[in-house]
Every structure is written in structure tokens, then in C-alpha cells.
Image (tube, rainbow, N blue to C red; front, side):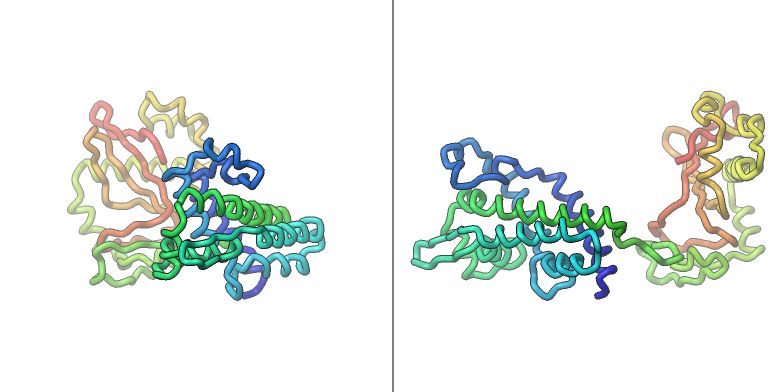
Length: 336
């Protein structure tokens, strides 16, 4: 894998790492525990929360510490040392920190006389014995040591690795590297219960991943004939609103006439709404009526020509237009 792609992938995975571990904070006292803290071991919280915080970090970190894998941290650090002119003051200390972590003296001795030395080896027992695999030999090692003792011994090592991982991500960000991002020019979709439908949307290329087909004039006429009066009134209101937002200068009187009176102050000068709806937006013919009497109409971007969506599908993007009825007339309440 090219180094530049590896850096982007690294940042993408670290973003996920940070999101997950932020929900499982690791007690700072446990993260910094060492042989000088024995007198305070009774103050540590070593229950399920600590177990989860350590275990989740351990599983997430594995990809960075398996030699030969794309995101092997030591390999990435050495590559960065060559690739970035400003790296020396950051990368060398991080490599030194890794060496110091791996040289820590941690030894687990079991009742059968077996001894496992080193934090990394004992972390591997946890990984292969219970978290990601179920190796009987390693699991026997685990049950031979009380969980509280294992947490106290390994948590500082795991916290130390986390520090190096996060510091490296900060360095890459400062060097102008961005996380892996989407490059395709088509929408992502998730189809539910629509195996029989084909992907035949051609005239709006952004939506070619949808299970559906392009619509002709006869199809549109049929949809209009089957629509209710409320459907048609809502469609007319939403389309007038969209068209009014596309004109410059904005006609505030026209826009105010289309929204619910009590919401006018929230729209300010409508510029934000106009910016959100720039481009080729099309309106879904399906109007969803809510229990509170409101209605939802969907506006999708990049719709060059009308098309029919077949079957339930999750789609990205677009905006919901919320409408309410006032004195028998549908008015725009909000856009989200």
C-alpha cells in the first residue's frame, strides 16, 4: 500500500478509535499505575467499566501492532520519518516511547509453573484467549490470574500505546494529511427487501446505485392521477418554495407567504436555506403524513431527470421539508 494511502487509512481508523474509547473512559489512576502506587491499589475501580475500557482499547489497537499489516505502527512511524521533513522532533520520541513500553518488566507466573514475560505477550493471551479468539491454552493462562491483577498490570501498557497512536494522528493532521474519504461521484444506498428490483436509473447518474428506473411522461402522468389533493398541494408548495429560493435577489414577500407565519422569524433572510438547496434538487412524490397532522416531503440533490425508487432503501443526503396546514392551506414549517 502506498504510504499516502496508509496515512489516510490510519487517520480514518483512529477517528473510529477515538469515537469508541470516548464512550469508555479509562481511569487516569489505572492508566498511570506502576510499582510506586501499590499503597493506593485499593482506591482503583476495577469493575466492569474498567474491564470494558481496557478490553475495547485492546481489540481496537491490535491492527496497529501486528507486524506485516498495513497499519503496523512502527512501520508507519519509520515511513513518516522519511516522508516528512518536520518529522524528526516528533517521530523519534514516539519510537522511543514504543521501545520503552515494550521493554517494561511485566511477568505473569501461573500455578502450573509457566511464566509469560512482557506486556505484549500477556496482551496476546487476552486477545487470543477471550476477546477475539478462544484458544484453550491462553484461556487457561487467563483464568489462572485474577482479573483485577491483570487489569492493573496491563492497563498502563495499553494506555501508553494509545498515547503514541493519538500523538501520531496529531502529527499527520498537522502535516496536512486527511482521513480516507469518499471519492465516488455516485450516492451510497442500502437496499432492504428489494432483491427483485433492478438498478436502471441512468438519467440522474448520481443515483445510479438505487434500485429503480427512469420515469417517462406517461409514468409521471399516472403518478399525478393517483395523487391525493393534499399530495398535489404539498408538491406545489414545496416546488414554489424551492424555485423562490433559487432566484436572486430573494423575494422575501413570496417566501414569507409560503411558510407558516409563526416561523418567519426563524428563517431570517432565507439565505441559509437557499444555500442548502443550490443545485438540481428533485422532490419525492411520496408524502409522509405524521400523527401530529404535519407532512414530510423529501428533496433529493443531483436529480437531473425524474426516476422511480423501487423497494425500501436507505439513501444519503437530501432535506426533509416539514409542512403544516393553516386555514386549509399547506405551509412550510421547517427544513432539515
